[in-house]
Image (tube, rainbow, N blue to C red; front, side, top):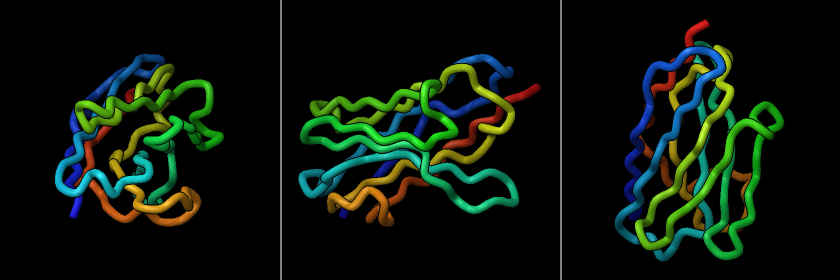
Length: 121
């Protein structure tokens, strides 16, 4: 089992920045990649970004490409999502996710509890 705990969410004005973090614990050696999803009010959960532990290959949704940067600290079992030039449309609960396989287009194996990111206009 892998436990994921997010932090760093909050309220920010449009154009501002925020960094959310996710600390993984448990059977972290099974993780192939970690990533972030988000779910806005009234909408389905959507993929935001992911990064592989081996090789550090990154993936981004088109909506955040160029604005968000995902990174990882293997020693701390932590993944970060730096969110810049935030827009009100980015408002959502951001969920950390862990993949135990290389199919990033598929569903993650584990989920965090989520952290709220609110962008005001």
